[in-house]
Structure formats: structure tokens, C-alpha cells
Length: 212
Ligand SMILES: O=P(O)(O)OC[C@H]1O[C@H](OP(=O)(O)OP(=O)(O)O)[C@H](O)[C@@H]1O
Ligand SMILES: O=c1cc[nH]c(=O)[nH]1
Ligand SMILES: [Mg+2]
Image 1 (cartoon, rainbow, N blue to C red):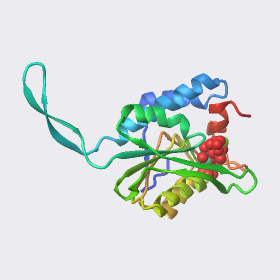
Image 2: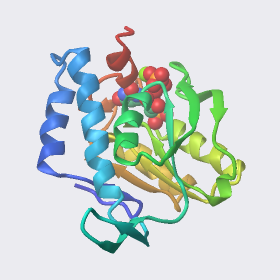
Image 3: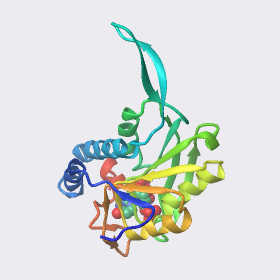
């Protein structure tokens, strides 16, 4: 499989198992949603491996001791509507202190260009570590536009977490935002003429929300 300097594929057996079921066209909506949530949580465990910690004094029922809690900037999750919404609750469950922003984009079915319809993030973006969430990185147009919007607002530290990435999308992110690490559960083969990832899993938003 090709490698890219900006890409990390998280291939934990539990993630690969759940992704296999997620891809299956027979998997119904309820299970599809559960699996998107679970895979997002498992990838989050991996990408937060190096989070900074700070010492704190606490009293256990037996004695006073020094422990460590998450330090540094507030992590801020930014799901790209609609499909990113399937990932945000799972990630937030692991990082309860995280703030949540929202970016609304849909891909024009003819041009495959992203159409921006919503943008709301917490204050002081320059002081935050952003994690953009979207299950699919296809042409990369949506993710690239979302990161560009965050940067225009002052963000300087952004990562992208997706479930399935196409080489085209990884290359687009490398060209447009080489500073952004892309985390994915799988790097697939290519895009079809409609811009869908092959083998992929279909339209993530439609399978999550039963709109098709
Ligand atoms: O990398 P790209 O070529 O931009 O394609 C990826 C985007 O397409 C899908 O969203 P869609 O436009 O279907 O909106 P939805 O999530 O609301 O279904 C998917 O959720 C990504 O956001
Ligand atoms: O395969 C794809 C590509 C773009 N958007 C999706 O939801 N699925
Ligand atoms: Mg969609």
C-alpha cells in the first residue's frame, strides 16, 4: 500500500473488524451508526497517545498524592456536517473536556466542489488544537475547504480524522495543507467517476441518516 508523509493508517484489529462490517451493504442504519461511533472512539484513543499532562494534587480516601490530568490547550472537535456528526459523540465521550465546533459543507453532485453552508467554532481558535471529523476523504475538497475555513479564523494546529481515505484525497490534503496530519482507518484504492471511494462504504451521510 502506498504511504504518504501526512497520513497515518490506524490498523488495530478491532478497527479493521468493525470497518469490514461498516462497509457491508447489508449492514443496517442502526448498526452503521454504532460502528461509526465505535471506530471514531478507537481512532481517538490512538491519536491522543501524546497529549500533554500536568501534575495535580489529590486526596484519595487513604492519602494525599500527586496525579496527572490532561494539560494544555482545549481540544476542539469539528465534525463536518452531516456525516461527521456520526463521529463526534464517540470522540467527545473519550475527551469530555473537548469543545465542539461545526462546519456545514456538501459536495455538489455535478462539480464535486464543496458548498459551504454553516460555520461555528469556539472563541480563541489560535489557542486550540482542532480535530476535524469526517468519515470520508474522497477528492479532499470538503476536508481542504474545512481546514481552510479554520485557518482563516486563526487556527494553527489542525488534524483530520476520517474512516476511509482515497489516495486522491490524501494527495489533495498534502498539497493544500501539508501541516495537517490525516488519520484514517483505511486507505482505499481510488475514486469512481461520481467521486465515490472504491471499495469504500457508499454515501456515509445517507447511510447514517437513512436519506436515499
Ligand atoms: O472528499 P470529498 O470529495 O469532498 O468528499 C467527501 C465528502 O462527501 C461526503 O459528504 P456529502 O457531501 O455527501 O454530505 P453529507 O455528509 O451531508 O452526506 C462526506 O461525508 C465528505 O464530507
Ligand atoms: O465514498 C464516498 C465519497 C464521498 N462521500 C461519501 O459519503 N462517500
Ligand atoms: Mg453524503
